[in-house]
Length: 419
Length: 143
Image (cartoon, rainbow over all chains, first blue to last red):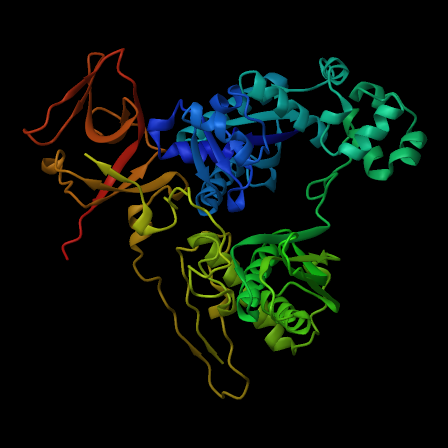
């Protein structure tokens, strides 16, 4: 019998930091978002102190200082590396695998009965913990949406959980529609207005009504709650339609070259994500702006449509540069820049007769494959286009004062132990 | 047509050939040369049997000198291996990392130093102890 599983790392960023800090094994820890803005991961001890997820750092500072909570700026080279390792371990158990996010993957397995599936869940948990040192929770069911619910249960009860017809109805009765994956705040409010408060109530509504009120994706989601698989692998209720990469600068910049450098780095990040999802883009937009409350305010943006979809970092960087040159205004202190790409089509469908001749196109695709392969092996951004800037201390690099070291991707930064 | 293929086996992707280096020169060559290129010796592959579970650390101190681990060495740690009596392990003792030889005999667990100037530690119930991984190699640079 086929089961869909969701494997979710517990407090992932905090768990990664703990791996090389045994002194923090029972200590409250929080991880801050880019530019040290908000709290994006908490260890269980930090959760118990009442620090909410997403809380701005400045707001939580008092509680943090009072309880001597350990604070880390995000260390993405480390998290990326650990995430890849976790995925590799999981892969060996799975028929299919879809990496959903840095700390979550969907898998399919076969098992003769629920007990066997749960045994496998335990095996996976133990194996990941032994090999990588990261605790994970595993949820199994017949659909992705139910697997997500199962994992949420697993986190609270022993790390492995299975939903089938013996417990599905009870669980849906106890689950608010707001807690279902794919139901965002706006839809939840609409549901509340229509008195559809629990997941079970949602499944009791008429299909036509659901589709009319909330659209087709929600209808599929409801089918999934009933145990009917409607989202195949690589299609999700919230599948990515746009990829954005934005970041505030550590220090304001007034010159075009710094802006272009920042944009090139964003293009690098976004294009890589897009390629990893198998897509090419037809629309690029860029923007850069001053602070919102600055005396001299400016928000510059531009966009371009590609008649032929592209997945090529170099082509996108070139386009971003051209746009930046076209809209740049001197004499302003820019504080933030970003790009967005959208209008995706699968790479396979992108015709190969492009702006370049077939030969160059083939080489370009090969170059992108190499770029991704090297970055996969040696750490993201180890190989970038020259446009992204070679100086690590360029002013637009954001504040990350409390970063731990890239313990697994930089020889000069591996843990040092006294023996 | 001359066919040249260079493989890089340390790239951890599903493909083992680096596509950039596969090249076929333009037509026009009248002869066909085939050269077979063997993979060069790869030290990483030699030292790292389970890349997914392998990590590296730097050590300071000479408590394991007689085992051939010297201050400044890089240790290769494999978490996937099971530590046995006699294994050199990276362990956590009272929330601190340490590297010692594991001795297991008659239910007694000892973390032994390999230098008479350092004490052995007998692991008792009260002591917080866990094994992080097994040390498989020590890399000692001479220059």
